[in-house]
Structures are given as structure tokens and as C-alpha cells.
Image (cartoon, rainbow over all chains, first blue to last red; front, side, top):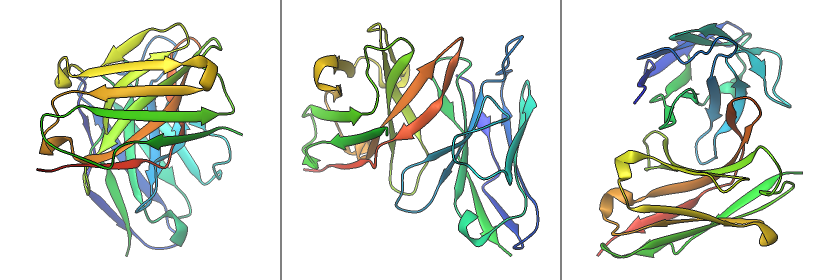
Length: 110
Length: 122
């Protein structure tokens, strides 16, 4: 299985940049695609897709969310962070079965 | 507008079979490239993918649950189903169904249901 490693928590100030990382135990990229996706989950709610294929913004997601990376290292950036962004963020790979998720990074306000 | 909604028994006893239903609208599981997945989340913990079913009836399972899972669909009624046999307390979780697409590769899960909480307890 591909293991995705995320830091448990990140504290940032409102209006600043948040950078959330996800490292895969093996490459999740093909010659043409980076098969890493990012989700936001607020307490008591279902996950919401933010970014697909590493860098593509999902429908309806604000442009202050962005994604980058390839191979084994990926980043979700929120800039600037707003109060509504307080949530847990998960990465997920679709390069190989079984599909796997990272353990999540909880974004907190400093 | 794409929506999904899960339904299930709420509470069941160890060794029983858990049957979950995902009723969706706004897309069809007979359309090329459409799929539905099941994902679960124990309270306070992370997400675990369980199974996927695709428009062409291809099915994929998480090997960690060995042979306990069965996924199926009813295209005419816009429903997908998941059965988990021989449940125990470790299966206590919120269960989500979510839409996934396939173009050249599989996409992320772009629409999710609200989830259904399942408790396994004697």
C-alpha cells in the first residue's frame, strides 16, 4: 500500500500563508498525471474535494487554495488563511489500489 | 445537481452483516466513467477507503478487509450498496459514499454524502 504521511497539525495566523505537506511512500505520478488529491473536512461534516490531480482547483473552491508537487512530495497552500479554513486537511492518492488517505493535518489559528 | 445520501441500520451486533445503501441523483452509474466509492471514518480518526464500483460493473476492494466486503449497484434506481459481513466493534464508524470519475485516470471523490453513523455493539 502507498502510505501518505502528513504532519498532525499546523498553526498559522489569519491572513498568512498555510503550507500543508503530504509525502508518499512511493511515486503517485504517471508520465502525464500527478494522482494526488486534497480534501477539507470540518467537524461534523463530510470531506470536500479542494484539489485534484495535485494542482487543479475543484469546482467552487476559492482561488486562495492551490496545490503543487509531483512524485512523492505534494503541498496544499492556503493564502491568505481565513477563519473559515479551520478544518482538517487530507491528501489521497489514486495512483494505485488500495486508494489511501493521509492521516490528516489539523489547521489551527495561532 | 449531484447529491448522495447514505442509509444504514444505525446499530448492529457483532458477527452480523452490515448493509448500507447510497442513493444518489444528478448522475448515472450507467454513464461511462462514473463510479461510486465507500469510505469510512471512525470517530476522531482518519479516512479509510473500502470499495469502488464503476459504470461497467468493475469492482475493487480494500484487501485489508479481506473477503468481508461486497459492493453492488442498481442503476435503474440510482443506488449503490455495500455489505460488510461478520462485523465487530472495529467497524464502528461513519460511512460515506462518494462519486468518483474516470477519464484517463481515476479522479478524486468530487461529491460526498453526509455520512451514516454505524455502531457495532453487543
